[in-house]
Amino acid sequence: MMKYLTKVKIVVVFIMAVIFTAACHRDNNHPGYDYLPEMDISRAYEAYSENPVFKDGKTMQPPVKGTVARGKVPYPYTKDDEDQQLAGQTIFNPLEYTRENLERGEVSYNRFCINCHGSKGDGKGNLFTSGVYKFPPSDLTLEAIRNQPDGELYHVITVGKGIMGAHGPQIRPDDRWKIIMYVREELQKPL
Image (tube, rainbow, N blue to C red; front, side):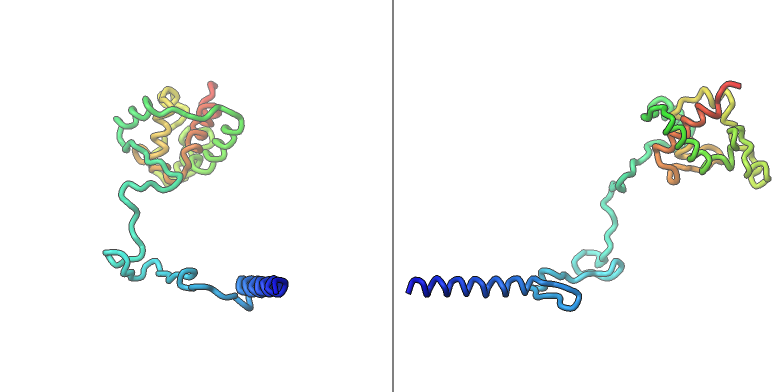
């Protein structure tokens, strides 16, 4: 009798294993079986559809106040002379002067700055010499700009100055520092 019960148990376990593995099998033609499918597949709401879950009835909720996007650091200064001087005193280039950083600075300068400031940094870029812009861009080779701290140049690139617009949204922070390195090392060389 004991051998009979053992054989029955083995057969039952085998049948259960076959059923269990068959229920878990999924492919494109046979999706398998779900135990409590409402737990597996929840009801989705479209981004702009009504949603009874939230008080305002909207699916897409605004970000929490004070939220900062991933990879973004809010810039604490505004576009004025006082903040520019403050930036010069408090912000310093965190990157090392390496050949790789200078090369990246040159690429970024040629991408974002050359049209206004020119290939020599003298303010004679194509947009000014062609007459598109009536006001000359800054000459980056002047003694006054040579004497400005890196933080002030970073500030000007980030928020702009005068007629120059803000380039902070377009140029990554590390690339701004690399542009400054390139200007310092290549365009402001003593003649």
